[in-house]
Length: 598
Image (tube, rainbow, N blue to C red; front, top):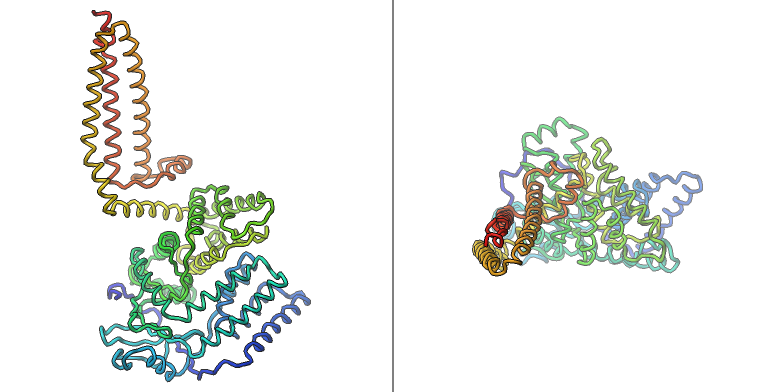
């Protein structure tokens, strides 16, 4: 349950409720209606082209109007199309990304029927309060406020819209036929129609069955806790295919914050001061968390638009609406992780090669031109990120990924839908970051993330019982190992002294060779010790004391926990001292001049 000390003061006094209208059964003429809507859109598009008025802005407005009018599945199609920035203009994709589900609410008697079907007990035995007027509605379902009887917790109850399952199933079949026709006539092959249909079918299947969302909430509540991000508690006992019950998070939506930032900035500034909310801290926390969700948890919120981000006191964050959750195949994730590391190290040639490997299908062409274009853009993107005065829209991660995808499209190389899912999450988050953290240097933030990730990995391994036992064994045996080395070196030294007395003629050469070898080993050990001191200073003191080239070299070494530094540096320091002692003993006159004295 969300702690009371994290609940902020109210920012928006009142919200409008959705209009209630009776649910109508899907028309049997639905395929004809869809066909006519698409044909009308194509005719208007053709007319705009003939009259030379087909600007990206007009086309975006036309497409958005048609999709919003059809609602439901078609809003989701618009959101998927907005991911294809490699094929469409940014203006067109931005318009589709902002698609709103202008659905009306449905009467409570439909909700009552679904509650009776999903709950084992009467509604009054489960809830002490249940607001019969929904406070939000969409084409898939609508949300009510209620209070659980078992613990008195305020909850949000999501109810699926009646008849929506049959309506979406029919629309998906219609989309399947469109994809078959497109494949038959080889229309826009780089769109990869099969992948598009699979993505749409998977997404809608999960959004229509609230049991998937309940499971995602449960899993991400556990994973995001380590990120310092709150996820509402879900109550599986009361969840089913048509119903979802989760904790109601009392906070301020990021969408309200962004709106007031333009309409009433003074009021927003007062609210942030009263609730100790720091823009930069919130923006950085969201960025770091999304990276962890993708690369460490392999389970990420796929729709981080401002309406799904809730601000709490002390710059804390909560995420809601887990109907769109992404994950990646391991092979793709491993390659994408390598690409990320190359980007952080600014190894643009390697990053370009790795990104090409992310493509689902490389054509039989000369790849050097696309590799060259990718390298040039990455270098320019990294340079722009360092300049604070350059607009956020020209240096954000969403911008960078979109331009990379466009370069691939120019060379007719398809982009994987898995990458587009990540791109969508990054672009929707950019909407908030543009106001929260416009000076963000993506490459610098990425480098910081990789360092922290490596430190988390080492800490996790040290917490593993088996690994910890091995580490403790090595640490506890270190004094014995050092003592053994000292004893052995002393024995070897005495042996050399005695052999020198027996083999007087050969002693001078042996002493010289021994001192030469020991001096050489001392130089190597001293160099290792100096390198470790430099690495310790870089990781634990201040990395900025070194040049950029030196920082690039030191950054490739994994972060070492502070506890291990004591043993590592101490061991090599003792080794250097002992080698120096051996060298000095070999150079003593009683050995080097023994033959002459005798």
